View 1 (tube, rainbow, N blue to C red):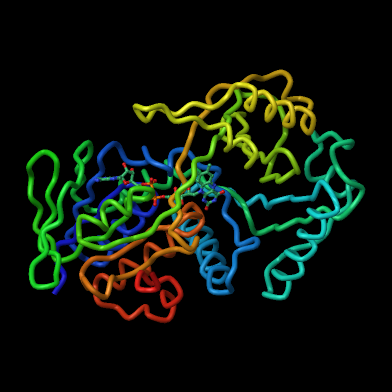
View 2 (view 1 turned 180 degrees about the horizontal axis):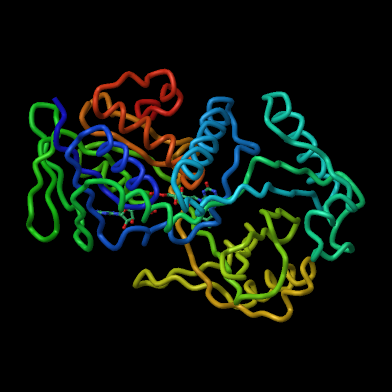
Length: 366
Ligand SMILES: Cc1cc2nc3c(=O)[nH]c(=O)nc-3n(C[C@H](O)[C@H](O)[C@H](O)COP(=O)(O)OP(=O)(O)OC[C@H]3O[C@@H](n4cnc5c(N)ncnc54)[C@H](O)[C@@H]3O)c2cc1C
């Protein structure tokens, strides 16, 4: 019987898995090499969506995950880390417009909410937007999408769960005996007995798997995020314009991102990350072109996050057949998936059959 579970990592996944395990009565120890939320979950665009997720199983688990966020935020007094303002998206050229048409047609076919808006309709939603930055029509609107504040979500999940927390100590070894995990060793020398281990180590999930003798292929990428100073600009939702993605970021700040800036991330020999200033300036320029009021503000911080991307791009969720009490909760899109997918993984750890929901995301496909 599973009584004592060790969860490795305290990002959105580790917090969600720990909270659900504790709610179901398990004794949980969650370990993080740093502070909770200090990994990718602290440097993410955190857009909640199921827009363009393929195959269908990935789309479906994303939709279920958006519903789980909605329900959690509704059920918790003050659950205001969740912002369901919708997402606006348009293409910059014929190719992008055609891709967007196909995406909208596909998700509509799945029964997902999406509609086309004109420039005039968008300006009623986003009155501070520069009309010249918008096409006359074919602006896709996905009203059920939004964004979360991951660090506040993590704080809520951990603060309401009866779990032992170990911060600033790394998992350095996993004891295995007779085909089962028996313990976890920490850098401090501590040894934690374990009836089960859940790997929620985000971009380091392959290293934790290796400690248990399992090979998890990962193709992580780094992304840069530009946080502005507070500005009196009305931005109420997630925007995907051709050269800039934006969302509100609390207290009047905006968060800017685009895949173009990711190529400007530099990593030094000692592992320090930086972003080329010219790329930051270009992104701010694109932001100001779309929201002229942003000219009154500057860059407050630039962060770099590492996307935890399993080898084939799909989530890895649930138990490892070769080591049945070692479990995975690892994916890109973790801001969207973690609350729901984490609960499925926790249920399976404690013996519940979640084979249907997890079938497409098993480790053994590698
Ligand atoms: C630029 C960018 C944009 C993104 N945009 C979106 C988006 O719009 N929507 C979306 O849904 N997702 C997005 N993501 C992805 C999403 O943020 C991640 O999938 C999610 O945050 C991963 O959470 P996690 O808990 O798995 O990992 P993390 O938050 O990284 O947590 C893992 C934790 O494990 C700890 N750890 C590592 N090794 C050890 C060890 N040996 N011992 C103990 N602890 C250890 C780390 O310290 C860390 O705290 C984005 C990511 C990036 C970088």
